[in-house]
Image (cartoon, rainbow, N blue to C red; front, side, top):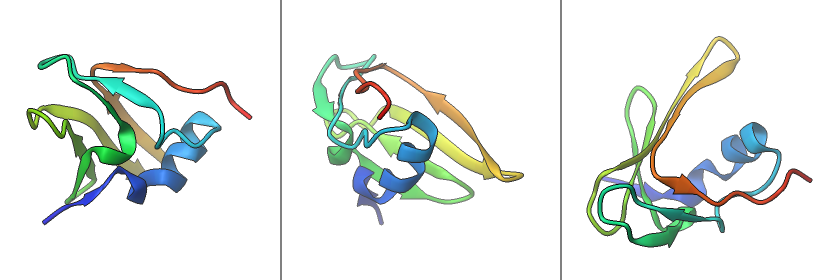
Length: 82
């Protein structure tokens, strides 16, 4: 079961200082460009965003000690902080 990137809107805004769910991301594997909100989100010990086109990992977010451990893949075109 999965939801989509919109579920991470609050955590992403905390990390990047802006809403990035509408930001485009180019996959490093298939080169497709899709907005972050379209990426399937899987929840386990943390959160994993996957490319909607090929399923490759786009990002991993794990909450730890009041902060986050984050791994981003591909090219994220983020808006400037508010």
